Length: 209
Image (cartoon, rainbow, N blue to C red; front, side):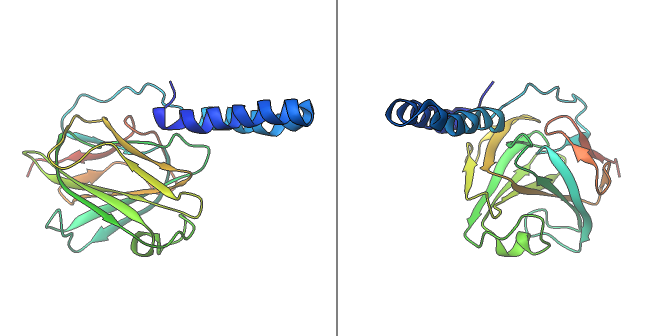
């Protein structure tokens, strides 16, 4: 399945291929056709099998774990936290999913720069969109961060929306990273350098205190 946001890109590339093929030469249509195929690949939305266990938090994105660090405090979570940063290349699925079931209690869009998403400063300098999700057990924030190619952060939810674990809430075009901030009462279940799959890979387990 292809995300609806991708159809305009695919159709534009196909139209360019037809126009160039007719007006100039069929060889000129090859580039736009390849681009249309890439757009179909980029905007793919494969089915994911979401773990049912309520104590498990899943990855919000496909990609590679760039960083796992400790935060003394987070303004939304309001306690000491773990932060996990996931880098998405232009070849990863870019649909973002909720790591847990809960209600959207906070939403912030912050304008900024478009430096490469693998740099340490992107979480502070780059354009980003944060969602704060809360349920009866904990608060977690997920932040979409733009990169040098990712100039468009897309959100399909708003305040007070209720999300199930693994629900799709947005995407980033094209290639960037996502940050997850969760309380230290949640045990981190991934390692730096690990490949993760959005909606399927378990990144944390809630530990009963």
